[in-house]
Length: 268
Image 1 (cartoon, rainbow, N blue to C red):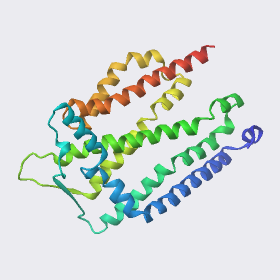
Image 2: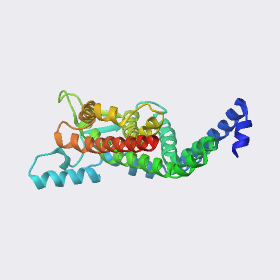
Image 3: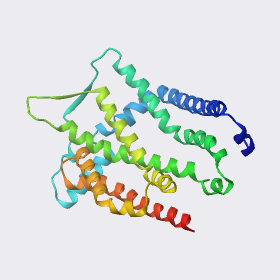
């Protein structure tokens, strides 16, 4: 689509163009989701329920680290003190469907970005297009890094803490399948979106909503929010909280650097 065609398109034609981009994205998610649906054993037994096993790489690493420095930890146990159950007639089928859709979205994320880029790129200037060639790659890389961080750090730390937490020995933890999957899903997706922070700051800096000065000014508040978030989703020990907080603060510092570059180019 050339620029002249874009300029001559009406509002309804733009909506029609957007509709087809959205439909193609949904179609890609559905196709990928069907593949994930068929691969049920691998998706659930290996991926979803991986953090429930004490042989999970995160627990092994933390156990070895704690043993090396001589600190007692519950990461060296043999099994978690809870079971996962299903209490509704269609609970397992519903979990199967929604997990496949979410997995389909995560895997199809680069293509969804590609469709978004195809829609907005005709409205950009040639120099803006050339400077934004790495948009899909960088956004996808950050998203997948966030998902990996959520899966290997946030999810297992949360499961380890919440799954073994008891207010009384008389209460057994029998976790519903929807609650367990929701924790893993939210940890992966939330971190995937959170790792897009540098990209978000880039665009906010371009339109003047944020500046390096404001980011530096509110850095201490951002640190407080990050530490609070880390304290909520991790076991009550400082080591786990630092493991979660450090990557987020690194992303924040990268965002400040990106904002400075944007401001510097605009001033030129």
